[in-house]
Length: 104
Image 1 (cartoon, rainbow, N blue to C red):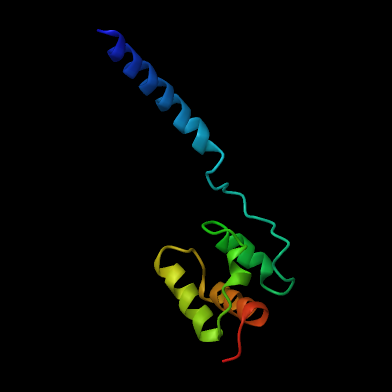
Image 2 (cartoon, rainbow, N blue to C red; image 1 turned 135 degrees about the horizontal axis):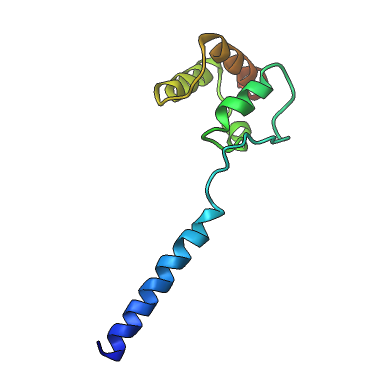
């Protein structure tokens, strides 16, 4: 193998080793966030527990919706695999509408 071939192999090995190390810190932690930016209220703990499995909670205050919009969004998440009961759905929608809703 010539010098150029050795160089290519070395660079490839270094990149292969560096990429997993660089992405490890960016993976989502499975621990629910205790984001204090969410307003206190009945249902906050459930929103933190259920929604932070897939999402950063900072997105909630930025996405205000009316009740219908929150119901539609929660139903969409349920159809994608969010594990919530009918009662939990109602509590989550009530919390989101009360704290991050817009007038109907």
